[in-house]
Image 1 (cartoon, rainbow, N blue to C red):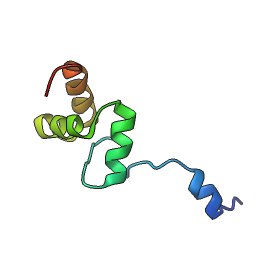
Image 2 (image 1 turned 90 degrees about the vertical axis):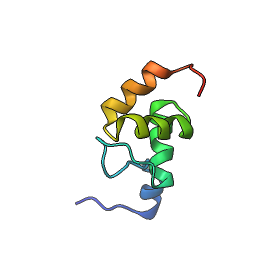
Image 3 (image 1 turned 60 degrees about the horizontal axis):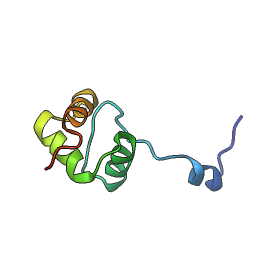
Image 4 (image 1 turned 60 degrees about the vertical axis):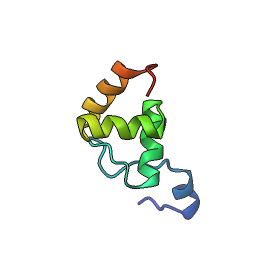
Length: 70
């Protein structure tokens, strides 16, 4: 049996509920995805707006548009 303490929980990284879809409604989700994808919040939101929430589509969009002015 494994016991989890509040200290253990504090050290566990946040993971979004749905790892296949990018959501920007919650600040913690947005922070996770911007860090994971190495992009800004504005670029992430633009990608989701353009191609939807699917992580593969968002990642491909960001890869194609990296370094371009907004």
